[in-house]
Length: 80
Image 1 (cartoon, rainbow, N blue to C red):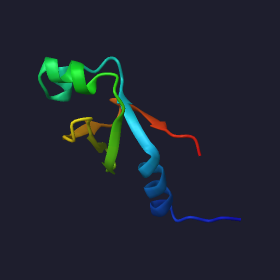
Image 2: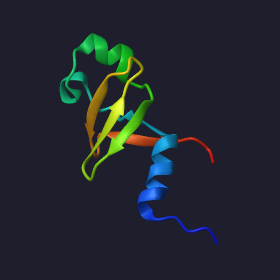
Image 3: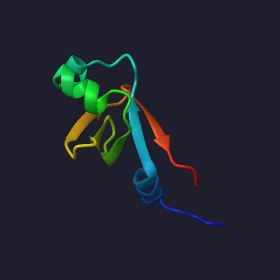
Image 4: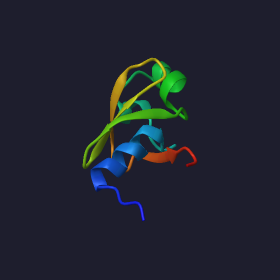
């Protein structure tokens, strides 16, 4: 039987996970200009950098970090 601590298990999941914003989120809720949102955020996988209790820090395809609140996204994990 393999046992991980909760923090270590989350660390491994975090390394393999991306998130995608829910389709109901728009650029004003996310906090960026519409053009940037449409080209780099909307529908794109955002890499999870750090997770907190009510928000997640993510990185977009240009390397910029953003804060996403819980309830605004769906987690996508790679197959194990």
